[in-house]
Length: 448
Image (cartoon, rainbow, N blue to C red; front, top):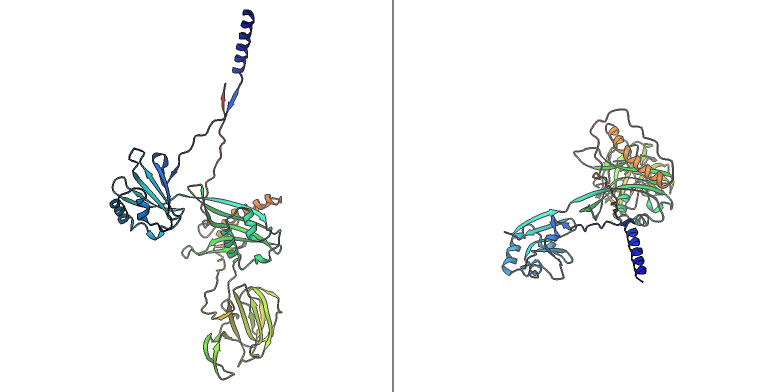
């Protein structure tokens, strides 16, 4: 029996030693990162979160923190110049930081009128108020895709803030009718997103560049500032053509205004006083009449008053009309581009001599075209062209490369830069640079 016990003990010892020699892998536990916000380490205080309730005001909120009436009045008097009390609305956040001793006394508190801005009130010595902004970081995002249904639904599937849709529609307002876009049309877009404290998403910051397929053609859009003093950003395609069409100042190359828009004018033919809802440009019979903006011919025909006339619809807001033509050169439903000749000057209808009556419609109402502030975009200055091409070259390559990978297409060839030197310093991109973030995997600890 004794021998059996000794053998059993030796077996257990050998088994234990063998097991001890086996390698055991243990995942290293990542330490919990301390919460730091508003420049304050939350671990140093007892933190109390409060939210503005219905009928709350600053007095009630501070009283809930067991501050004396005297202290509350002192705080309100001190913050009134830095904190707009009207911003203290329902669901806005207050954060109170209390000492960790037995007194649990309020040391600081923060009010957040929005995600980005905050007011810090320091009560540790005298009452000091600071207006501050949380740190922002900007991250570049470039995606490519195809239209699945509407632009809204497509961006939603890509988890993109819907505000980007509004920016794209505004940029392409004069180039693309998104209601007529086809399912399957390709697009690529690059934009910057804002993050507060590097983690809290704060929306789209800027549109860097984009392209959309429309009627079988890629329409690029690049933001560019031609005049740094004016600081006006316009969008241009890859060749430097203005993306947003602008209205010509007149439908004739030679301008000779004989009558302006007025609510009371003596009509030279009818011999009565009546409103004149247009601008008359006199010119010899047969002078070409141009459409002042790209659009579709909505009406083309003859009436007793207008004579031969053409009406062009430009978008949901604007239409233009051209009266008293000697000859109409377009048909209803025809697409026309800015500067296309649509007719010839004449004196048909109620006209005392050869001229074109140019009428402008906004939201279905006739308005004075000479006084209306119209969407406008300056053409690319030839001196700015080399600077523009240099600026957009890497942006275009980035768009095309992302699209090529997405659609399994050949990567784009390197774009040739212009030989001549830039006239000015290169324009800065509309978004802020993004530092490249590196993700490093934590090694596992080897124990024996």
